[in-house]
Image 1 (cartoon, rainbow, N blue to C red):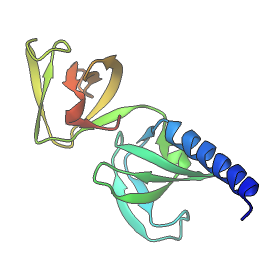
Image 2: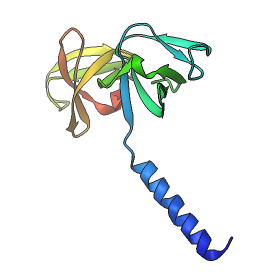
Image 3: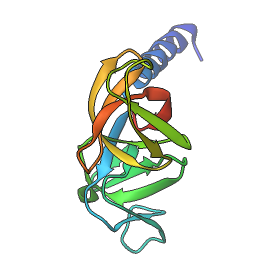
Image 4: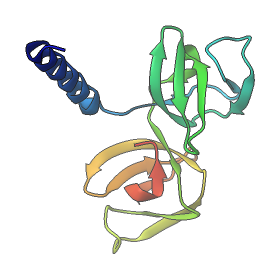
Length: 150
């Protein structure tokens, strides 16, 4: 490869890599109970699992009517785009998470949540904390390292 051509190729590759690394993670949530996840982008593909409403997933590939996603456990699957919504949820990633009244460990402990409990994401931006709400209406702050879906 000629040096000039190589330089252009390298510059284009680095620009593409920079654009890729600058892309923010995209998360969506399962819109309805019983969402089916497949091993390929087709209703005729092998069914891998069924998910409940609210489960957050990370979008990896947008393929017109289908999305390639990853769940909290790292499982990769395809799901019909209409099965998900843009609502942001998080799921407890530790065995026992404490939800506080403010973004501070010294603030009152409001309640405790077990692993895999899903919360609606209300606010980000508090250093090391996010504000969440449970489906029963209880809300508070949890440390970001205790949830998945951010």
